[in-house]
Length: 456
Image 1 (cartoon, rainbow, N blue to C red):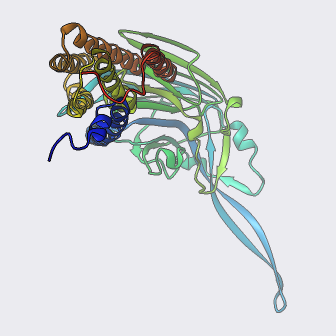
Image 2 (tube, rainbow, N blue to C red):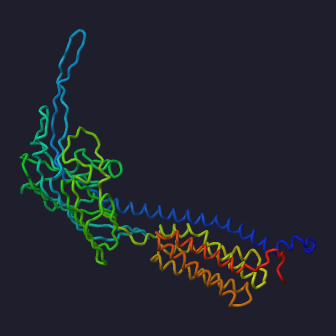
Image 3 (tube, rainbow, N blue to C red):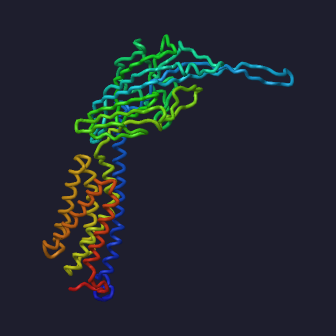
């Protein structure tokens, strides 16, 4: 077929309108591999989470602790009157078991840990080990004095309970005393969990019998060797609760219902302290429990052993902005084609777009082996060099192809800024997009868009 048989069609395919429409189609097509890369990022993130879970299962889970609290079994006796036609009025005695739960009048919590990072393959998780010390004073007098006349408790069966999300991390009881009397702890929380479904519905915890319990002021001191990972959460059960957490971890993230009143963070680690009064939380100082679930998870506070660089979160964020940065090499190559008056086939446009998409695949694979920002630099340099050299084969001089390298470099610097400034990512992205649009409008302000054929 004579290639000049359809001159109008040939003229249209070489015109700016056709190229602009083609660029739109190519960008939409490249969203497919970008979507696949994003799916791969999510898959690798799930694999990392699974590896972390396996490590945690073997080491000891996240530490969530509440207590100690005193539990005293009791019985409530009620007279139930029933009336029948045959027997008339009948009185039955109904006995309902309950537990009197008493919180400490004063509770001091001290958690001092050393941290380490354990790996499984290329995946890792922050772990901690150390001592959790619980000390303070109980004053059960008020709780006992407010019992009703039909309620009876059995002080000889009193127990001291510490509720935990998991007791697997307990290594040993260093010390445990009640009024200078040593306590012997057993596994279990006697069915009294305080966290609800958000943390644990199991029977995890430890308890000890309080022989010779009296409704008088008593001091306690319990030191537990314990280990866990990822985060610590504590419950302010005391009428006055003071908590202090310290560890050799340089990037803590304080979480929960209360932020620390004082904290110090440095390269050698952190320390933080909380003071919580019972008036600031919805946990009674004492209560009668009839077997209903207690959920005070909303009052938990503590610290996450936060990793300053979350590889998969940063990769996910990078791919989210990929669409904007995918357009940059296309527009650059199109403008260079216009101003150098050299016709460029659609295939080089497609290859340039694929090269830019490969950046995100390189970033993911390298960041699993190297620090994220080192991986970012290597991936950005590789793709920038590739696009610059390839554009040199398409354009008449190094000066012209140098513009491609400059634009791609600026776009990766801008993406780096977006990844680092999470709070200002939208602002940086929108200002960058506005600047690119303004530059394109300025450079093409005198261009004759009606010209349907490139100059020879």
